[in-house]
Amino acid sequence: MIIIIDGYNVMKTIYHHGKMTEKERQRFIEKIGEYAHVKRHSMRVVFDGGPYMWPHMEKKCGISVVYVGAKDSADDYIIDYVIRHARKDVLVITSDNAIAKGADEYDIPTLASEDFWSFLTEALTSPVQQVKTGVHAGVKTTTEKNPELDVLFAQYTSVPTKSSDHACHLRKRQETVAKKDRRLVAIIKKL
Image 1: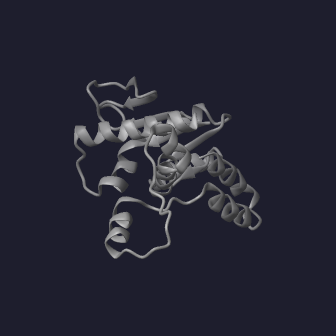
Image 2: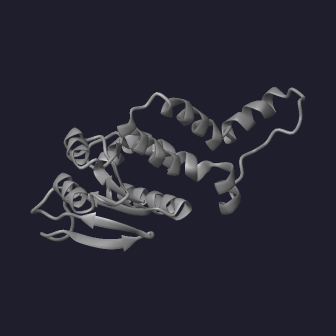
Image 3: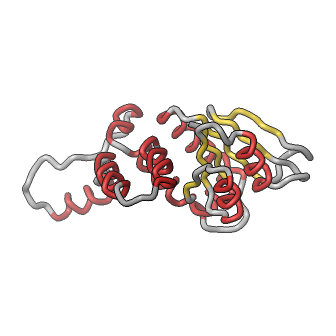
C-alpha cells in the first residue's frame, strides 16, 4: 500500500500551532519513518515550500519526503499524485476537504489526520513493538494496595489497547458500511 501524507496538515493535529519548526518536522519525519518500517508501507510525506523553486524529493528515515517548492502547493501535488496512481492501492492522509474531495473523484480513500496519528501512535506503542524496540510497558504483578506505588505505576505506564479490540469494532461496523466504504475499512485493518 502507498500512503501519501499531507505533511503540514497532519503536523497541525499534533503540534496545534501555526508555523512548524524544522525540529518538529524532523521529529515528525522520524515517527513516520519508524511507522513505515514497522508496518512495511510505502510512505510519501508532502510539504509545501522547500529549498528549491520546483518539487524536490529526498529519502529520509526510509520514506519519501517531497517539498513542492514555490511554484506548487502540497494540495496540488497530492491531487496530481492521486490522478497518476488511481489504479494502485493508495491511501491519502489529510483533513483537507479539497484534497479529500479530489481523491474521492478517483475512488482513492482518505483518512483524517487525527485518525491516522492514532493508528500510528498505537502501532508504535503496542506491546509487540515495545518488545522489538526494547521499550516495555510495566505490568503490575501483585494485588496488594500501595497508593504510592500505584500512583507511580500509573504515571509511568499505560494500558495498551489490543489490535483485536479495533478489529472487532471494525468487523461490526463493516456489516453496516456501504460497499464504497468497505475498501477504506480493509485499508484501516492494514494500518
